[in-house]
Amino acid sequence: DIQMTQSPSSLSASVGDRVTITCQASQNINNYLNWYQQKPGKAPELLIYDASDLATGVPSRFSGGGSVTDFTFTISGLQPEDIATYYCQQYDDHPPTFGGGTKVEIK
Amino acid sequence: EVQLVESGGGSVQPGGSLRLSCAASGFIFSGYAISWVRQAPGKGLEWVSGVTGSGGVTYYADSVRGRFTISRDISKNTVYLQMHNLRAEDTAIYYCAKDQGPAAPGTFDYWGQGTLVTVSS
Image (cartoon, rainbow over all chains, first blue to last red; front, side, top):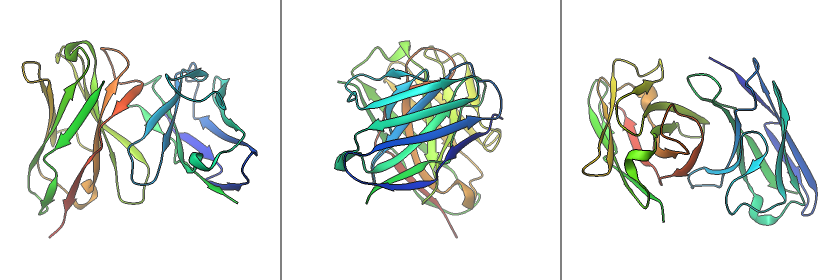
């Protein structure tokens, strides 16, 4: 299985800060990389698909980048409603696998 | 509006069985693959099983293959996950998730609210 390594596992930032999360795949995943947001007690929601495409209705402060094995997820201007855990997920190879998650908190 | 509603969770003893259901609405049911993704208490997300839009091809994680069976009833717009020989490590919230396309599990663009399965003696 392809291993997805996310870092950091948690972070604390101030409102308005730029926040960046990284995700590294154990092999080339051809940009088949998604990012999800999971708020406490809720189901995950798709934010970014195919490494950099914004899902419908997602605010433009969220963005994704990277290629091959190294990917980034950025919140450009953290808002209080962004408190959540964020997961990357690859689907280049079966089975689809998720990173361990990054918990984002407000400082 | 796309909706996925899971049901069937509950408490069961090790070795027992449960059948989860995922009732779908708001989209052409046969046009999209559906997966089950689970989350153990306080842990991350784990893909469990998926079925293509037509229902003709099914996929399983190694951890559940041979114990779980996924199926879909197009006439009822419902996907099922039959779980046998349940283990303590199967304890989790089980989410059903719609895929962006009809084929192999890939991008999950809509999720249900989840149903809790607890395996304990």
